[in-house]
Length: 573
Ligand SMILES: [Mn+2]
Image (cartoon, rainbow, N blue to C red; front, side, top):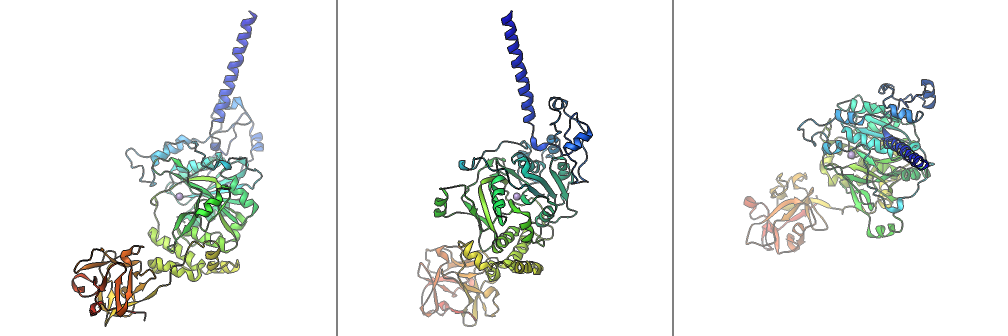
């Protein structure tokens, strides 16, 4: 009898333990990030509620109060620490794809794949194992600023949830969503119900730069964190960034940007051996650190990487420093060029840019822009913004940009006086300093002499032809244009970015075709001047010849200094 009682007691206790564990577990497994802002619901009275959780004054218009109480079980189990949760399923469903709709149509990524994933899905920890340590927590809290235009609901929500779930609670002061005039205001508005989330909506399309400045102006924490609207923050992403800014507020820091597949939404770790750079076309690119640098980094893979350029979407900056530095150039439209501008400005005006390898944030990279560029195609707006950056920050070096992208010269870029004054006021260093100290890897293109290639009164002329076109002869007019040629040190004969190219090396008795191709490093494009005005191919014994110009354009025929049709005079007049 006694024994039965014992067994009964043991069973009963086990049952209670299991039950407690189960309820605790179901509570903990709730998505912490999705707690609603207005109610810490429970059996407590309204007075004690407001005392415990003061009503915030932010976002008055966009935060409809929620109906109290949805989960009685939670109330009973833990009356002072229960929350209402955001209805994730309902929110996503209202933006879901129509039957038969192309899942790539709206966002240029596979929305189906995104919608099918939970907002708090697990991610692989892509950091170097040396980063897996306890990070200090006495850091300045940050305002996270996320701007968006017609973002898919599931990616936007997952960005927010990953911020809230993978950051220490006290370090996220608020999340400011700036809705840049999306088609459906509810996409953003509904998210204002979530704890810590504040939503601002533009009355018209402003673009990334003005939206970010609006978000920054509304921010109340001392550190700003800019994120794209299709990101996922990984474990301990925030602390390594905040430490660097706390130590020195002139540091502007970025995480390593991992890749979220636009097709499957698989999360893929990116290399931490990269920095941001560019060529003279001023388009951002990732480049590998040198072998020596990589070798050096193996000693401590957690050390920050100085980067000449930031990708632009994700970074942390001290708020006072952001303002002192002149925020952003708000005359830049929609997208593009702003990362170039802020990168030059930070470096030239006394700050630094760093990639922090222990901080990882995933980003959905796409091949195309999903949204429209009002007021011009994406190319024109990109060129306008880039010109503004080049004109303000690059001094005479901007000539190399215009040489690489000649069409940019025709794009109006507006007034830059204010930014020039800013540069003056902050006593920023010249671009020459930036090149020498920050980006010595970017080499200056060789000096080219421009001129015309003449035969008597006639000049070599593109006749307006472009890639794969032949060139001919035309009366010299000495006003450049189609008769403008540069001869480079490598021996290229170049018109803008097109080079005179020998089509093949197998020499025929006549008609060895010469056409315009984009300049590259290939031998087909290398020529050298010979005695007597001959222009010979670098590899084989053929020379530029105008004998067959009427039928085939300028061709390359067996060199013969007796032939007038092979005599060329390069005139720089
Ligand atoms: Mn993006």
